[in-house]
Image (cartoon, rainbow, N blue to C red; front, side, top):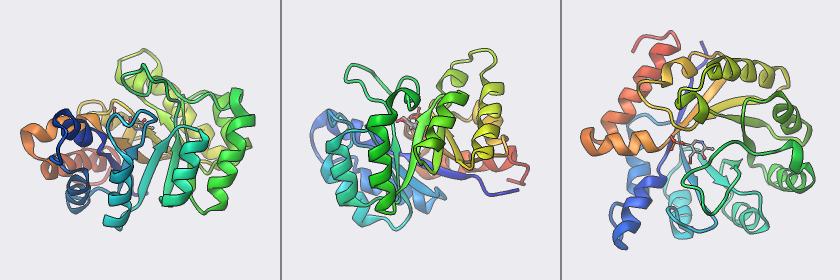
Length: 241
Ligand code: PXP
Protein backbone atom coordinates (compact mmCIF):
# COMPACT_ATOMS: atom_id res chain seq x y z
CA UNK A 1 0.00 0.00 0.00
CA UNK A 2 1.39 3.40 -0.98
CA UNK A 3 2.20 5.77 1.89
CA UNK A 4 -0.58 8.29 2.53
CA UNK A 5 0.96 11.67 3.30
CA UNK A 6 -0.34 14.06 5.95
CA UNK A 7 -0.07 17.78 5.35
CA UNK A 8 -0.77 19.78 8.50
CA UNK A 9 -2.47 23.10 7.89
CA UNK A 10 -1.27 25.56 10.55
CA UNK A 11 -3.42 28.56 9.58
CA UNK A 12 -5.23 28.55 12.88
CA UNK A 13 -2.06 28.85 14.91
CA UNK A 14 -1.84 32.24 13.21
CA UNK A 15 -5.54 32.88 13.95
CA UNK A 16 -4.80 32.43 17.65
CA UNK A 17 -1.69 34.58 17.50
CA UNK A 18 -3.54 37.35 15.66
CA UNK A 19 -6.28 37.39 18.30
CA UNK A 20 -3.82 39.20 20.58
CA UNK A 21 -1.63 40.84 18.01
CA UNK A 22 1.68 39.58 19.38
CA UNK A 23 4.05 36.83 18.28
CA UNK A 24 2.64 33.88 20.25
CA UNK A 25 1.81 31.15 19.29
CA UNK A 26 4.37 31.11 16.47
CA UNK A 27 3.26 29.32 13.27
CA UNK A 28 6.87 28.42 12.39
CA UNK A 29 7.31 26.70 15.75
CA UNK A 30 4.08 24.78 15.10
CA UNK A 31 5.31 23.77 11.64
CA UNK A 32 8.59 22.48 13.07
CA UNK A 33 6.76 20.57 15.79
CA UNK A 34 4.27 19.01 13.36
CA UNK A 35 7.11 17.83 11.10
CA UNK A 36 9.04 16.42 14.07
CA UNK A 37 5.91 14.48 15.08
CA UNK A 38 5.52 12.86 11.66
CA UNK A 39 3.73 15.29 9.33
CA UNK A 40 4.95 14.93 5.75
CA UNK A 41 4.44 18.57 4.89
CA UNK A 42 2.99 21.90 5.98
CA UNK A 43 0.07 23.70 4.38
CA UNK A 44 -0.71 27.39 4.74
CA UNK A 45 -3.35 29.58 3.13
CA UNK A 46 -2.27 33.17 2.51
CA UNK A 47 -5.68 34.76 2.16
CA UNK A 48 -6.26 38.02 0.40
CA UNK A 49 -7.35 39.61 3.70
CA UNK A 50 -4.39 38.05 5.64
CA UNK A 51 -6.80 37.01 8.37
CA UNK A 52 -4.47 34.28 9.63
CA UNK A 53 -1.21 33.56 7.79
CA UNK A 54 0.69 36.74 6.83
CA UNK A 55 3.42 37.39 4.31
CA UNK A 56 6.08 37.29 7.04
CA UNK A 57 4.82 33.84 8.13
CA UNK A 58 5.16 32.53 4.59
CA UNK A 59 8.74 33.83 4.42
CA UNK A 60 9.66 32.42 7.83
CA UNK A 61 8.12 29.00 7.18
CA UNK A 62 9.59 28.78 3.68
CA UNK A 63 13.05 29.53 5.09
CA UNK A 64 12.62 27.55 8.29
CA UNK A 65 11.43 24.10 7.26
CA UNK A 66 12.97 21.62 4.84
CA UNK A 67 9.76 19.59 4.45
CA UNK A 68 7.43 20.33 1.51
CA UNK A 69 5.40 23.52 1.84
CA UNK A 70 1.98 23.64 0.18
CA UNK A 71 0.74 27.19 -0.37
CA UNK A 72 -3.03 27.51 -0.73
CA UNK A 73 -3.84 30.59 -2.78
CA UNK A 74 -6.53 32.32 -4.76
CA UNK A 75 -5.94 32.48 -8.49
CA UNK A 76 -5.01 36.17 -8.55
CA UNK A 77 -2.10 38.14 -9.95
CA UNK A 78 -1.03 39.18 -6.46
CA UNK A 79 -0.89 35.59 -5.20
CA UNK A 80 0.87 34.39 -8.33
CA UNK A 81 3.57 37.00 -7.78
CA UNK A 82 3.98 35.94 -4.16
CA UNK A 83 4.06 32.23 -5.04
CA UNK A 84 6.69 32.73 -7.72
CA UNK A 85 8.82 34.81 -5.34
CA UNK A 86 8.58 32.31 -2.47
CA UNK A 87 8.78 29.15 -4.59
CA UNK A 88 6.94 26.63 -2.39
CA UNK A 89 6.99 22.92 -3.22
CA UNK A 90 3.31 23.04 -4.17
CA UNK A 91 0.52 25.54 -4.72
CA UNK A 92 -3.13 24.66 -4.29
CA UNK A 93 -5.54 27.01 -6.07
CA UNK A 94 -8.65 27.60 -3.98
CA UNK A 95 -11.75 29.75 -4.38
CA UNK A 96 -11.82 32.70 -2.02
CA UNK A 97 -14.59 34.99 -0.92
CA UNK A 98 -13.93 37.64 1.69
CA UNK A 99 -17.13 36.98 3.63
CA UNK A 100 -16.69 33.23 3.98
CA UNK A 101 -15.57 31.69 7.27
CA UNK A 102 -13.58 29.00 5.48
CA UNK A 103 -13.19 27.68 1.93
CA UNK A 104 -16.76 26.76 1.04
CA UNK A 105 -16.96 24.46 -1.96
CA UNK A 106 -14.44 23.72 -4.64
CA UNK A 107 -12.97 25.85 -7.37
CA UNK A 108 -14.95 26.21 -10.62
CA UNK A 109 -12.08 25.21 -12.88
CA UNK A 110 -14.39 24.41 -15.79
CA UNK A 111 -15.92 27.89 -15.68
CA UNK A 112 -12.63 29.75 -15.17
CA UNK A 113 -10.26 28.02 -17.56
CA UNK A 114 -9.28 31.28 -19.24
CA UNK A 115 -8.13 32.95 -16.02
CA UNK A 116 -6.76 29.87 -14.25
CA UNK A 117 -4.90 28.38 -17.22
CA UNK A 118 -2.12 31.00 -17.34
CA UNK A 119 -1.68 30.86 -13.56
CA UNK A 120 -1.32 27.06 -13.62
CA UNK A 121 1.14 27.37 -16.50
CA UNK A 122 3.25 30.03 -14.74
CA UNK A 123 3.42 28.06 -11.50
CA UNK A 124 4.20 24.83 -13.33
CA UNK A 125 6.95 26.50 -15.37
CA UNK A 126 8.56 27.60 -12.08
CA UNK A 127 8.64 23.98 -10.94
CA UNK A 128 5.81 24.39 -8.42
CA UNK A 129 3.47 21.40 -8.23
CA UNK A 130 0.01 22.77 -8.96
CA UNK A 131 -3.12 21.44 -7.32
CA UNK A 132 -6.76 22.43 -7.86
CA UNK A 133 -9.13 22.29 -4.88
CA UNK A 134 -12.32 20.92 -6.44
CA UNK A 135 -15.50 19.11 -5.57
CA UNK A 136 -15.49 15.49 -6.74
CA UNK A 137 -17.27 16.47 -9.95
CA UNK A 138 -16.07 14.77 -13.16
CA UNK A 139 -16.31 18.07 -15.12
CA UNK A 140 -14.02 19.83 -12.67
CA UNK A 141 -11.56 16.94 -12.70
CA UNK A 142 -11.47 16.89 -16.49
CA UNK A 143 -11.01 20.67 -16.60
CA UNK A 144 -8.16 20.43 -14.07
CA UNK A 145 -6.36 17.90 -16.23
CA UNK A 146 -7.06 19.95 -19.35
CA UNK A 147 -5.43 23.11 -17.97
CA UNK A 148 -2.34 21.21 -16.93
CA UNK A 149 -2.66 20.76 -13.17
CA UNK A 150 -0.61 17.89 -11.74
CA UNK A 151 -2.81 17.37 -8.70
CA UNK A 152 -6.41 17.73 -7.58
CA UNK A 153 -7.42 18.06 -3.96
CA UNK A 154 -10.95 16.77 -3.44
CA UNK A 155 -13.05 18.94 -1.12
CA UNK A 156 -14.26 16.67 1.68
CA UNK A 157 -16.42 19.33 3.37
CA UNK A 158 -19.79 17.93 2.26
CA UNK A 159 -18.72 14.43 3.37
CA UNK A 160 -17.55 15.80 6.71
CA UNK A 161 -20.94 17.44 7.19
CA UNK A 162 -22.57 14.04 6.74
CA UNK A 163 -24.18 14.61 3.34
CA UNK A 164 -25.56 11.33 1.98
CA UNK A 165 -23.70 9.79 -0.92
CA UNK A 166 -20.61 11.99 -0.54
CA UNK A 167 -18.19 9.20 0.33
CA UNK A 168 -19.13 7.36 -2.86
CA UNK A 169 -18.66 10.62 -4.83
CA UNK A 170 -15.21 11.07 -3.32
CA UNK A 171 -14.22 7.48 -4.14
CA UNK A 172 -15.45 7.86 -7.71
CA UNK A 173 -13.77 11.27 -8.01
CA UNK A 174 -10.46 9.79 -6.86
CA UNK A 175 -10.79 6.99 -9.40
CA UNK A 176 -11.52 9.45 -12.22
CA UNK A 177 -8.66 11.74 -11.15
CA UNK A 178 -6.19 8.87 -11.27
CA UNK A 179 -7.50 7.76 -14.65
CA UNK A 180 -6.85 11.32 -15.93
CA UNK A 181 -3.26 11.11 -14.68
CA UNK A 182 -3.88 13.49 -11.77
CA UNK A 183 -2.42 12.86 -8.33
CA UNK A 184 -5.31 12.89 -5.88
CA UNK A 185 -5.32 14.65 -2.51
CA UNK A 186 -8.24 15.37 -0.18
CA UNK A 187 -9.10 17.66 2.67
CA UNK A 188 -11.44 19.91 4.63
CA UNK A 189 -13.30 19.12 7.83
CA UNK A 190 -11.44 15.87 8.52
CA UNK A 191 -11.23 14.60 12.12
CA UNK A 192 -10.25 11.43 13.98
CA UNK A 193 -13.84 10.25 13.54
CA UNK A 194 -14.30 10.75 9.79
CA UNK A 195 -10.79 10.50 8.34
CA UNK A 196 -10.57 6.71 8.02
CA UNK A 197 -13.03 6.30 5.15
CA UNK A 198 -11.22 8.94 3.08
CA UNK A 199 -7.79 7.56 3.97
CA UNK A 200 -8.95 4.15 2.74
CA UNK A 201 -9.60 5.42 -0.82
CA UNK A 202 -6.59 3.88 -2.58
CA UNK A 203 -5.98 6.69 -5.12
CA UNK A 204 -5.76 9.35 -2.40
CA UNK A 205 -2.08 10.19 -1.83
CA UNK A 206 -2.26 13.08 0.63
CA UNK A 207 -4.65 14.53 3.19
CA UNK A 208 -4.48 18.16 4.29
CA UNK A 209 -5.93 18.69 7.75
CA UNK A 210 -5.96 21.87 9.78
CA UNK A 211 -8.76 23.03 12.02
CA UNK A 212 -9.30 19.77 13.89
CA UNK A 213 -5.59 19.16 14.47
CA UNK A 214 -4.94 22.65 15.82
CA UNK A 215 -8.13 22.61 17.90
CA UNK A 216 -7.42 19.19 19.40
CA UNK A 217 -3.84 20.26 20.13
CA UNK A 218 -5.27 22.58 22.82
CA UNK A 219 -6.22 19.45 24.76
CA UNK A 220 -3.58 16.91 23.82
CA UNK A 221 -0.62 18.85 22.44
CA UNK A 222 0.30 19.15 18.78
CA UNK A 223 2.80 16.23 18.60
CA UNK A 224 0.31 13.79 20.13
CA UNK A 225 -2.49 14.86 17.76
CA UNK A 226 -0.25 14.57 14.69
CA UNK A 227 0.94 11.11 15.81
CA UNK A 228 -2.60 9.92 16.48
CA UNK A 229 -3.95 11.28 13.17
CA UNK A 230 -1.10 9.53 11.37
CA UNK A 231 -1.92 6.30 13.20
CA UNK A 232 -5.62 6.47 12.27
CA UNK A 233 -4.66 7.14 8.63
CA UNK A 234 -2.15 4.27 8.58
CA UNK A 235 -4.64 1.84 10.05
CA UNK A 236 -7.32 2.88 7.55
CA UNK A 237 -4.79 2.24 4.81
CA UNK A 238 -4.34 -1.31 6.03
CA UNK A 239 -0.98 -0.82 7.72
CA UNK A 240 -0.43 -1.54 11.43
CA UNK A 241 -0.46 1.51 13.72
N1 PXP B 1 -7.44 21.81 2.01
C1 PXP B 1 -7.79 23.03 1.54
C2 PXP B 1 -7.58 23.31 0.09
C3 PXP B 1 -8.30 24.02 2.40
O1 PXP B 1 -8.64 25.23 1.91
C4 PXP B 1 -8.42 23.73 3.78
C5 PXP B 1 -8.90 24.79 4.71
O2 PXP B 1 -8.00 25.83 4.74
C6 PXP B 1 -8.02 22.46 4.21
C7 PXP B 1 -7.56 21.52 3.32
C8 PXP B 1 -8.07 22.08 5.66
O3 PXP B 1 -9.38 22.09 6.14
P1 PXP B 1 -9.63 21.96 7.70
O4 PXP B 1 -9.01 23.15 8.34
O5 PXP B 1 -11.11 21.92 7.80
O6 PXP B 1 -8.97 20.68 8.13
